Image (tube, rainbow, N blue to C red; front, side, top):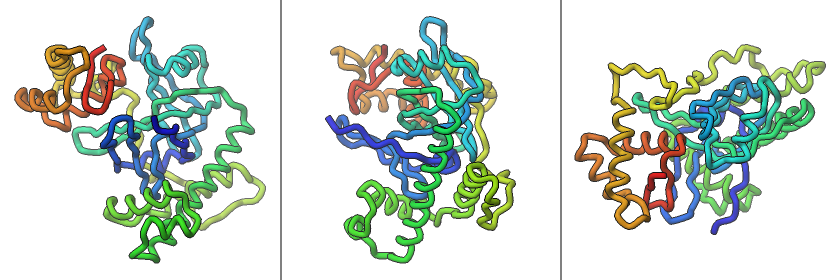
Length: 309
C-alpha cells in the first residue's frame, strides 16, 4: 500500500485551470491532476467560505454537493456514502461559515470537452478567521514558489527531473512541472496567478496597499459551473442535446450486473467493448462511471474492475 499523498494547497484559480491527468497504471497506484504550474495533485487542502450545500441524494443515502469560496474563486465538493465523516459534517453544518477540507480531486469532462475539477473531501471542519488567513498566506507562498519554479525551468530547456531535485525542488514538484510544460502546449498565464496572490495579500494586509501592478477586478477568472452535473437527480441538462444520461446510467448499471459473473465486479475491458456495441463511447463511459461513483452506486474494487453496489 502506498503512503498517503501530501495534500497540496492551491487557490481555486489554479485548480479550476487544471485539465491534465496522470492515470494510475498499476493496482493501488495513485492518479493525479496536474495544474498549469506543475502541482501534481492527488489530494488537496482547501479553505474558505462554504456558501452553498445541497443534498442531491436521499435522506437515507445523502449525496452532498457544495461550494467553497476562497479569495480567487470556487471549489466544488462532492460528499457521498464513502466519506462518512465529511457527510456527517455536511448534514450538521450551517452556511455560510468558514471551513477547511482535505480530499481527493476528481475530474469531469463535459460534452464540449472542457474539464472541470471537483474535490471529494475526506474531512471537513469549521475553522475560524485566523485559520483561514493562515491558509491564504501559506497558499500564496506555495503559489509564488510554483511560479518561480516555472520561470526557472523555462530557462533550462534541457532540464531533467534529477536536475530540478538537485536545485531544491521536491520530486513531485519537479516531475509535475516538467509534465505540465510538456503537455499543456503553452506557457502558463502568470498574470492570473499574480493577480490571485495580489488579491490574497491585499486581504491579509489591507493597510499595506499591496500592488503587484494589477487591478482589483478579477473578472477574467475561469467560468463557474453549476453544482449539478449531468445525470444528477437535480440536473438541468437539455434533453434535446447530447446523450440521455439517465438512460445510459441504467444501461451501464445493467451491464455491470451481467458482467459480474464471479463477484469481483465487471472487467473494465469487457465493459468498454459492451458499451461500444451499445453506441456508448469510451469518453461517455468514463463520464457516466464517475457520475455513478459520485452517487455511490458503483465503486472500483481495483483498477481493472468496476462493481455495482
